[in-house]
Length: 229
Image (cartoon, rainbow, N blue to C red; front, side):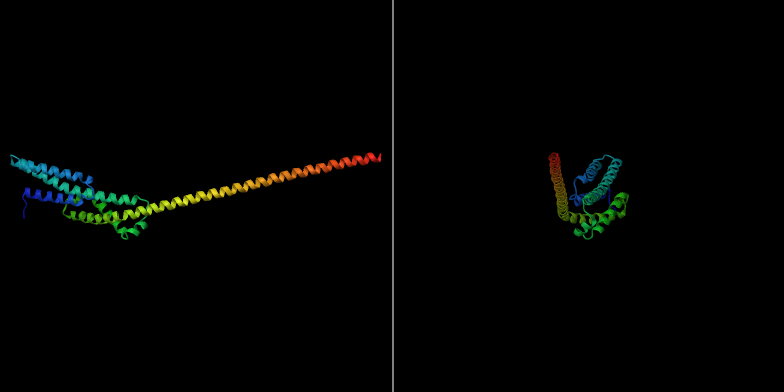
């Protein structure tokens, strides 16, 4: 079946609108360029219907077709970008691949699919060819994983909160242990200083006693000498 320009525009417009509705639950803000492309397509379609000559009508129809194609491509591109951002956001958290495998056993396959989607995004020209179904398949897989990520996020947050608490507990324990050791060292030093002080007092008293005995001996010697004379 050969489509007339108006039927082709309607078909492409419906495809683009369908893509927008399919992916709008991901992020409306990312779809703004695609929505604008559809607005431009609608504008040129109206201009084509009101055209007074065949050349103007064909020009506006061609532009409407281009905007419809671009709208569909932009919708897919925005969706892939949003899904990849979702993956990047999760990977930016302080969780390892092993952690993620606890929640999503096929996490490695998920990362592979994200890499494939990124590769398709970098080669976005292929979307305008017949094999654009590749990006549709990639989006389907990423959207499935996105739903699983959303289900997993509370568990990831709980894990991070638990680890933060454990880290704080360890830090508090280490600080308390350091304070205890320092306190014991201070007490030991004080006891050592006290022993030195007591020892110095004892030695001073012994010196005084010995001095007293020495003085007494001297006096006794003088007394004996005087008595002998």
